[in-house]
Image (cartoon, rainbow, N blue to C red; front, side, top):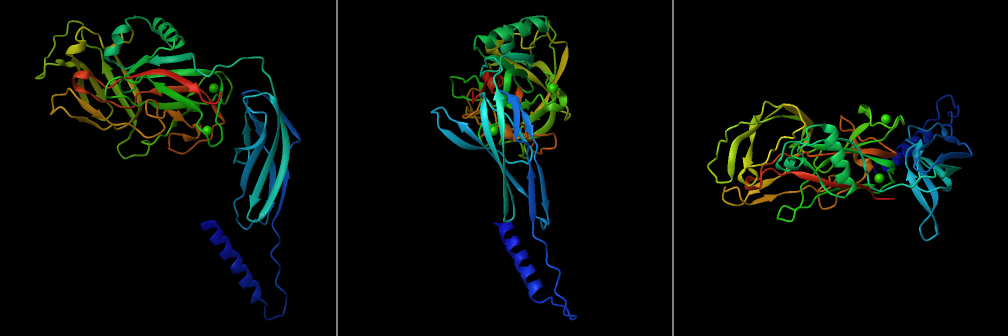
Length: 401
Ligand SMILES: [Ca+2]
Ligand SMILES: [Ca+2]
């Protein structure tokens, strides 16, 4: 609306200018030339299923009076009932076109600059690849959990063994423990998950607890394999900025370093019966913080530290504040744990829109789709006799396949 008003006033100003600007010499004023637009767009493009083709029109606008052009791309798509629908597929000048099905797609571009509207059309032929695709990300790229009581089941001494075990766990549809702050898993899809316009694209399902603490949130990074080398390169990763990302309680670039407890360590019991060893596992952070994870009585025979990791290791990420309240008069036996609204795994609706991705400076990035997902624990919270608030990943799934 603001734009409309300023446009109205500039028209008004121009009209006023013309009506009273006949100069003293009696010459007519030079008329302001009309805005013109031309669009050049190739007649056809080709690509394959789940592969991006860049559609780059040449748009020339003259005398645009400072107006910003708006772009809208629509495609004719046959829906599941066989009806042809026109759907919006983009709003940028260059369109990264990607489709899940092999077909011929008529495309229309509409460019609007003030009151001037022009259209151009093209066709994209999307061919078959001969492959079948799975909705779940099952290709394991990396896995580094933080120390936690769940690690006792992972008594492997080499990372290769651990990765094999995690692959099997994922293929069986079972949950993979990530632990507390920084613990992560990196997974790849067998196709590019399409960033569908104005829709959520994939989901990150964490294990749901049966007790009062149902959800524990996890943060997400995504990568589009832009250079097509099959690897998630460092500069291809972007964080999903969910509901907490810009809050003042959020700590960006947080790091925690965990230290392996000595095998002959003598326990330091606390004042509560569940506090088996209050000096169990030392941690430090990059904010001059240091403390110890308490080993709880319930898991006193467990080894929390991942057996295959060296004597110390550092995990990084955005740290989010999760409200936690002891509702057992400080006994540490019952807690109320908060949750996040949107943009995380392990919340009520863990579906993610790829358009929520941001770069390191917090600026939105436009990705046509994603090939890799990193899920990591972005909270750090002790919940008394239930130990630490930990997360386990169940699956990451394409919502539109
Ligand atoms: Ca989307
Ligand atoms: Ca790459």
